[in-house]
Image (cartoon, rainbow, N blue to C red; front, side):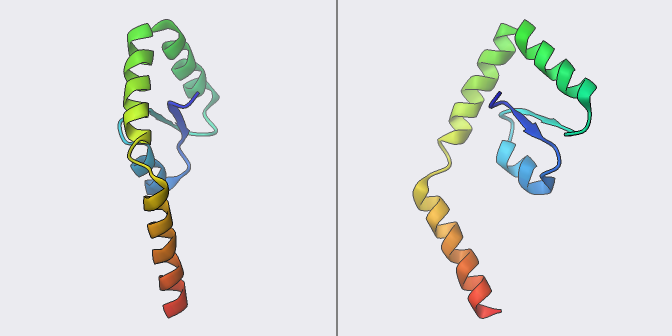
Length: 79
């Protein structure tokens, strides 16, 4: 499910997810179960998360990815 994210990504995971999903501990089976059951049973929550997810995904572009990758290369080259 696109709206769920493993919680072991540190700050990057939180920044990537924004308000478009549920941050979960990857080892907490009960939390995953609860989140999935909640999404299955709550159509309005599913719809809201879907809309936020699509809005969030639209903020990521190939141009932005290329520029960030170039910044990493430049940083490494200076080191």
